Image (cartoon, rainbow, N blue to C red; front, side, top):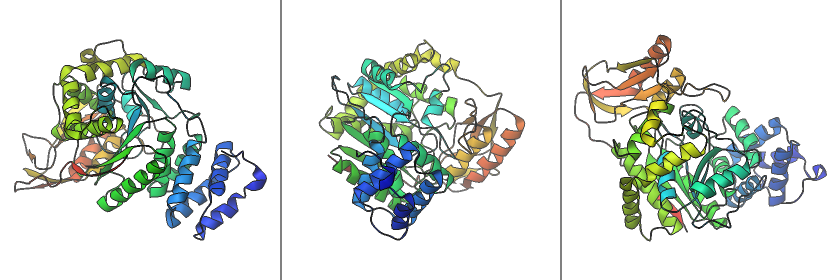
Amino acid sequence: MSQYDPKNLIPAELIRKKRDGQLLDEDDIRSFVIGIRNGHVSSEQIAAFTMAVWFRGLNTDEQRNLTFAIRDSGTTLQWPDLSGPVVDKHSTGGVGDMVSFLAGPILAACGAYVPMISGRGLGHTGGTLDKLESFPGINVTPDIATFRDWVKQRGLAIIGQTPELAPADRRMYAVRDATATVDSIPLIVSSILGKKLCEGLDALVLDIKVGSGAFMPELEKARALASEICAVTQSASLPCSAVLTDMNQPMAWTAGNALEMREVIDYLVGKDRNPRLHEIVLNISAEMLRLTGLADSSEAAIDLVEQTLDSGRAAEEFEALIIGQGGPQESIESLAQLLPEADIVRPVYSARPGYVRRVDLKVLGMSVVALGGGRKVASDSIDHSVGLARVAEVGKQVGPDEPLVMIHAADESSFEQASAMVVSAYTVGTEKVTVPDPVILGRETVR
């Protein structure tokens, strides 16, 4: 990457070019990103640039150059001495999304290495790091050397973005969140891949959520995102698969940090597995195994995933993850007992009996925020104990003996607020309903 020279960059001129629909060359973009990293580009100029991109877009070359510039704004990890492939997955976010905690241990148990850099929740979608921090003592902010050691020793580590990895993206994302430009496909692609490409991966799988609980409610836009991501990864010579998964109804039985971690433990030890969640885990994990060559077909990969779960090896990897990152030195069965519990646990019922016809998952996710289990702004604190359990899915019969959800709340006020939101999120009818959508909506792969 060329060295930043303030004489070669006039941010306002670059912003004007994009505002007026002109193309930015590689040097334009790299200079601008270096300016973001070094603080020579102001937050106001970043905001103007992201808004110009939101309106004007980026072509394939511009998008690739922005992605690579973000990757190169910090350290790029390398893994020359590992005995297996390096792979990661990324989800575009949803309600009750706990796939990372299941696919990561499965892949590690199969001989892959998973250096997973994750994020925190904002708005109606939960954050991987917030869920992990439900366990006392967990460290998600190690230095790079420690992160490398964790991955080498155990095959899996889940951490937050560090100052050394894609630092330009940290500034850009904060501005995008404040300026309503998060949903720009070129900016989504460059943000996701800028971070993932600096992990030194041999393969990447994207779980792109579609529906009312996702940032991409429309299937057409989600397909466009999958296509753009695969185009950029192809230019980076990175095998990639984008799997489109349904988020029009709950993918699990819980939503909320500690509650989801309990469901993760139940899933891994074989106590209880939500069918929709299980199908997504099978498909995402199988794609990761296939892309890395650890399985030679999708069928063989799914068989390997099921064997890894049934043998208990994935549960052992999850236990090692928690212990290795500073959590409780306990067996996986004992870990659930150490998770925080809410003071109030109470059902919420439909105003009339019948069958669930529709769930507005964004509203349901925001009810978790109202309970204190999510963030409205990045500085909000998190109550790990609160959330929703026994979440009713489309087609389920509800009534006086079967609630819509069980709310876990810290106090009466938040319970009442969340209860009203839950009731408003559900549409209940008198006739039986056939579940409308498959869990896996499509995929796109580049090898």
